[in-house]
Length: 427
Image 1 (tube, rainbow, N blue to C red):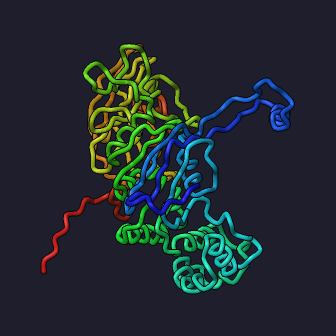
Image 2: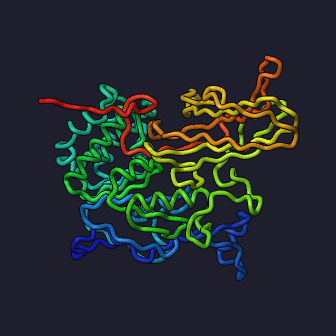
Image 3: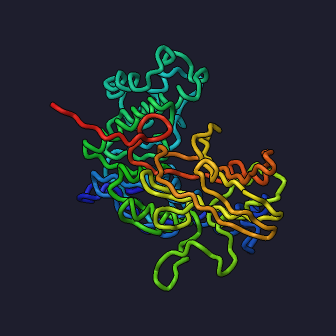
């Protein structure tokens, strides 16, 4: 990695960077290749990054998004010198603090204090410089007398708090973050975000990777979307997120002649649910007198996606096939959080929507349209089709935790949902 002090307003310059890994089918092929014992190529090349280029200006906050395996963490490791590129170069002007693998340099036998000095020295600080910052580090970590105990006695929460405190209190010129803002409990996360905002106000350069699209939207001046090691888009966070939503559901090349994204594929028989990630361990049961055969989320523009923006309208669309005659079916959906707590839901019965009697072979589509007021985060969708034949409750078909929905938010309040308070302050 080159350091160039004549980069003017450019803090990080990534130029035609590629990272290629050799994939072998057999261990002996790897050994033979390493010892030059064969002339025949025994490996496949995997491009984790393919001729990637971008500039980060001094004082900018830039987010990198993309699916797993798109190369996000790889480019951060190359920028920080953890990995070397196969081709291309990276130039950095400024002292970096990298929140990549928190605590990677900690010695488990050392105390917390000893690890602060060890980690600070590895970053490039003198003992005197660490002395000056020690109180701030310990106050930020807030793990009490455990700082004098061996790190091997720490809980995972205490470990990441100390590691984060060391990394973020060394006054860097460039901060590079890989998902580290999600560590610890909600109060520690709040403290981390306050520090993040403080860095922005100080005009420091920030480059970070996150699956939290709300943070990308809220904090970033620009966003870079990677896909299979290549730069797919660089520009406004909103446009990057919109395109990322299409990547997630495989709709990149799915435009009709008018340039509008198709959201139904009844013309070629493709199921809606193939456009969103489905839980392979979904809990399914029922007597199948009626069967949920398809479902999907639609955003406020009618596009199929499992990512919606808080405050926007969205729909849950369900298709039901009837295998027997049913007088009045009830269609329902609900959301749980990741801890399994049911948050909200409704049904045609709750909403007093009558469903006409159905014959065997009939199908119906039920669309639940509503405004998204849940807090930003991930939720699990459950679907059900039930009824009360002759006054007895009967489950025709249920799908529990069938897929997830990600809510993108730039403002969260307390609890599970937003009351959308209108606040007036009189002086």
